[in-house]
Image 1 (cartoon, each protein chain N blue to C red):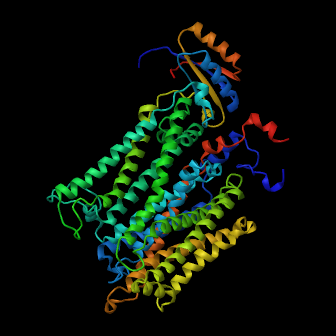
Image 2 (cartoon, helix red, strand yellow; image 1 turned 90 degrees about the vertical axis):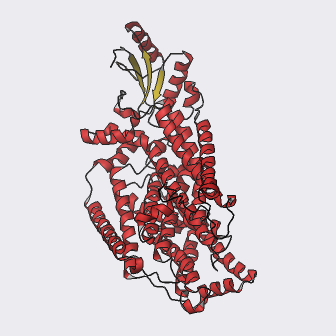
Length: 457
Length: 176
């Protein structure tokens, strides 16, 4: 067979099942390294700062943020859409790649799903702060039976669809993640030496014993969860895009929004997975599990979705011209060539359309430093994409006398940074306390000890 | 706790092929109660153990229907009956606008009910009193356990375990 057609093994280093258990659980059983403490210290400090700013913002009012009429959706909504998008890669890897029988997903799905959950937590905070008085928001966010006469939420509003979409997505991602974790938690429980550790992991593992009858139901359950998570993940960002597309605002009111948002979400999510895993495989010495092949495959997805996003940008422009609507044309010309926000637009295009082009080349897809830098570029670009969509359309609305330039206030920067602190704090806790490689799944795609003789011919 | 004096004869294996072969032979001997213990799902184990297909898809379908109709009815009831408020001139019964929430409730209820049913009703979890035969069973060891009563039976099943080439054999006082 020629070199090119040979398939690389999914796990390198010719490991046995026991080595997999030892190496993955070893990360949880050894004392945290100095690097971990430093990283945790910095990210939790940033998180605390973010929470302090949010607290003060709630006391003083959201006027501290940069939002001014007519831009009443500022940093908060931009960042909300950004974080929800980041979350998409996890479910894509765990559900869609599972249904497509892409076995390489097994090494990365656990951490990608964890990332999804943490990203959605970060996302959920922003609309809540944006309401100004989150303690009242339950009345208009959830259909909550109350004593204020018949008073319900407006189900005809896309904002309510969004609440349902994001909270369902969070719940199902959590259930999916936990279901996948149970067998591995049992592994950690059975290795635990200290009674307290045994007790805690034992409780979390629910008494799982890996019975053959159990696995039979479990696998069907996992398949069903993957089956329902697949349309769910495609629907979430579609519904988020409805927040914009349903409104009759130039630059928002387009039918391309749902697929465009979903492609962008997968694009940014995979970039974040690359950012995190490039570091994690280095720090925890998991290079033989998260191999170059994995990173190469993810970079291909980034390239493909990056091209989709680029196509969406071009289509938007074409349709703005082709529609003949003067408002639509005006907004798009302002976005790309206007004097106020063209800088943001071109940051977006450079980061999202130009930077992934490197991944056409195998050498670039397998270059750790380059992919790390590009993944950060992609995330910057995707934040700016949402900034461009939200801000350019609002700041120049139908009434020129009310036009106003939007800028982030220092509070906005602080809270935005704080959300990254929260995200990384949660991720660092995850890699400390839970197995970040799905051991049971990795073992099931490894060659068995009996077949190994045949493999080394 | 009642004294049932049940004994499990446990045979250990070290590869998925070996346990699969052993499970097939055990199935053909028609023991009343046996189970395998695997660190990961072994392909073909369902047939090897002679298991019926899980009823879970039916549960999921019922849950999906319930979630879907529940979500749709909630919205219809809210806007057509309980809270008839004219918002932006939209019709009271604007069913196309109900589709996203209907879809989400269907998914939400399906996911929650299916998973809970699987863990609680089918697997009997959480249950912390079951005997864990060997700590390596969730790592790299495979086991086949047959539940029996009485001394003679134990010896006979131990003999059977030897026949199916179990690497280690032990009898443990526990029920499956």
